[in-house]
Each structure stands twice: as structure tokens, then as C-alpha cells.
Image: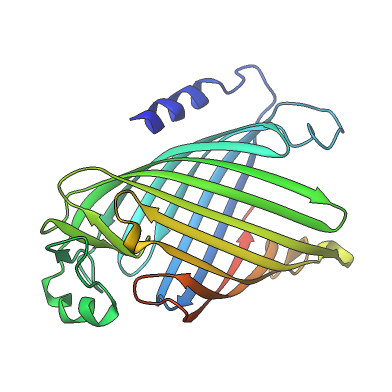
Amino acid sequence: MKSAWALTLLLCAAPAAAEPPRRTLTDTFGGSVNNLGLQQSLEAAWSWPLSDSRNPLLADAHLAVGLTNHVSPAYVRLAGWAAWAPLSVIELRAGVEPVYYFGVVGSLIGFPSQRAAFDEDARRALRAQAVSGTGVRFFVAPTVRARLGRVVASGTLHLERWDVNGPNAFFYEPLRDTLLDSTRANTVWHTSAAVLWERDGHGGRKLRAGVHHEFMRVRDARWNDMQRLGPLVVWTLGERRFGVAHPAVLASVYYYLEDPYKRHEPGASVGVRFGLR
């Protein structure tokens, strides 16, 4: 409910008499191993600048609203969100995301306890019992950014409230790769941080390489914590290539520092991102 109120306040704060917003449409497609998955994300955003200053602390101050649609073999999600960045180095985003689970490839699968085994073998054995269903995720996500010469850093904290009418007392949630309670709302913390070295090339080419860290915890279920660390590379191919704007390749390899079933195991993900206008 707090996320819904924050979204309403941010939407109402957009300047009524300001210049037309800057519109962007961005598509991202990627896949991962350990966990195995595919996802396509399409985001439309409208942004209003809050300052015309060239001061680095104010140059990217803005208000924004948007819609983000995620599709995978397990679910479809559509998030409406609003963001406020009073300074270039900080942004607060809040939104609501309804989700529909298809009832295939392991969603939704019920479990009797939050301590039940939900590794890949356990889920495969129960796959025939998967059902379709709906739910909603509310979220607030503050982000901080910094730059020192060629080094850029960012960190985001997702504070999430999940409410899904899943089967059995608990169910497997594929986005967060964990068990959530079917009988009440769940609180999830997820952090993502990166420190990257940046090198610019000709024609808008850019290479960023460095280290990425993630952590996730479900309230009252510390034994299912996830933490992973590893290198991340983002390679932007130019301002416009292949008929799209700012195409980029994203690749990461990570090592699970904490996880109930993947601790001390590697994983990897790769994706492509580009603007459609």
C-alpha cells in the first residue's frame, strides 16, 4: 500500500506546464544458466528534466513515469512506475507490478513449508502439479550513483511486497528463485551494486567492465538468503547500429557466496539491450 501511495504522489508531481517529456522505448532480451531462464523486457518511459544546469549534480535531475513489460516462459508481468531524481546521483522509483504465472515450466508449484527443498530436482519432480495464478508486487527502489574519473558505481535497493495466491502454504517464485508464503504478503529485500571502469570509443562506442554484487533476503527466512559476486561487462556498440539506438551487449559471470542449493557454484547471464526510438 505504501508503494501505491508513493507512485500516486510521484505521478501527481510531474510538472503540468513543462516542456514535452523525453520519450524512450527500450528492449532487453537475455538468458541465464544456474538459474536457467530466458526473459524479454520492453520499457516505455517519459521523462521531464527538473533543471537546465550544467552542474554534474543537477544535470540529470528529473521526474519520470513508465511501463515495463517482462515476459518469460514462466510468467508475464506489467509494472507501472514513477521515479524522482532530485540530483543526478540519486533516484527513487516506486511502482506496482501485477503478474500472471502460466502454470508451466515449474510455476506455480506449492510446498508445505518454507524450509522444504526447492532445488531444481525437487521442482522437476513436482512440475506436473504446477498451476496458473495471479499476484502483485509492490516496490520502492532507491538508487545511488557516483563517478570518479573513468570509474562509475551504482547501487539499488529493492524493497518489495509480494501478494500471490499460490498453491499450498508456500510457492516457488521464479523471478526471485525462492519460496514465498501463499497465505499472507511477503517482504523481500534485494540489492544490486556494481563498480565499473569505463572507456569511450568513436561513434558512441563504450566499454564498461568491473564487478557486480547481488543479495536477496525474504523476511523471516534467512536460511534462503542469496548472495553472488562476479565480473560484469557492458559493451555499447554505438549511438545507432543495426537500425536501433545504443545497442549493447551485457554479460556477467558470478559465484554464489550464499544460496540454499547453489553455494560455491558458478552461474552466468548474457543479454542484448537497444532503444527503439
